[in-house]
Length: 511
Image 1 (tube, rainbow, N blue to C red):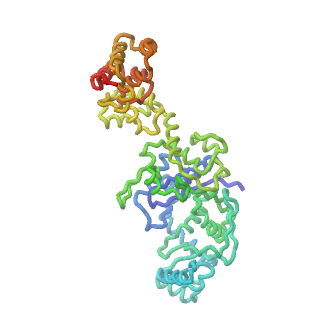
Image 2: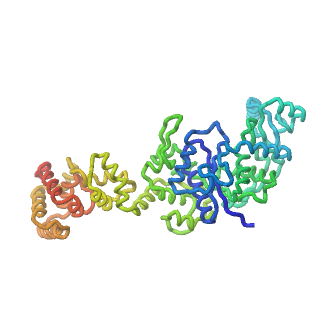
Image 3: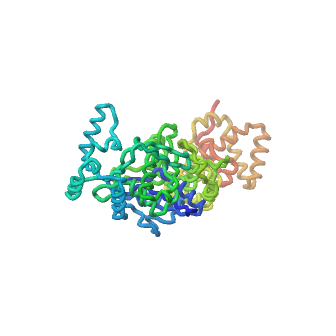
């Protein structure tokens, strides 16, 4: 039977959404859209001790900014809600009780002190303690205690947890769509806690119950969950849901730029790039962590960059819109090995997508930056400048440094450029520039003929020397676009004013 594709992104509201989590959401979204399926946002907040105010809203805003849309979820509702696990709390107990009743789980009453003592006992023997099929007989649980003692403790309100009961020495195979069959023996697995006496399930129980009840067809998640997959497969078996168990795909890690270890916030701080989609103000520490949006990244650039970290379309194509990604995405092309984060490549993607935006749009983003510098320029002029200069930038925030001389005349001049370019006799040549601008029509071709062809070439002058000195006079340094285009943009009077000021300020120099 062909099931409808239903995937879920199920983050915990314990802080800002890491860019690796964003990639997981993106791959789920691409898979769902390609297969005409549904995408669900479920908030997994079973661990209330780690709950961070504002995190859930941050997750929703971040994914919305990136264009990752949901069909159902905590912010949208739907037919399979509620979509926040703490709101589903009453339903989980019956499933924990069912597992106990069917012999797949048991009550464990061990105190933290008793567990700690057992760990130390094992450490003394140079062994690692694990609560499993080989050790549970030595602990205080409903498998080792008399039935009446178990009942007394339950009635008396003793604290307990419900643990999964792995069968002894059972090979458990998980079929992974990326890695193939992964097999683990039950003796290597600990009897994970599924439920606590406060009525709250752990991730493992809630996750399986919710995926089943929400009819999730595919679980696409990070590879850090692969060690838990045998437990999840066994839970489906224990509940009798194996026939409708979702297919699993465990995604490779996002690695540090150097490649050794998982990408973390500290790497971003150290190397100066964001690891979160949006700025995050930590409500506890007050610390600000920067986000891609506030750093000036375009959402489509972030999506394109992330999609290719761990997946490729099987071609050389690198620029892929969301529609392109939906059309070309396939789980088969997801890598098994981790993907190194590349800061320069992220900037390159942003540069490429910025070039696709209209000059008008870039100008609208640049306007507030100009106002911060006290500039109130004509909008059409700003649009023209942005069109000329956008190829030189990867972020709109870089425009002021690249274009300030279009708006403000230089007040000083690069000493190294003066030494290299402003040779004896240069004031005479600059005076000639003023004369030409005052006498020929103010048109690109006319000025080109009079200045470059007739004056510089006609008199055997050094083209680079004269034109770079003119650039120094107009810009203050020897950078910028085509010189005559710059002159035509800032205008005749402003060019003459700047050249005259350079003559007066720099003056004649001696050899």
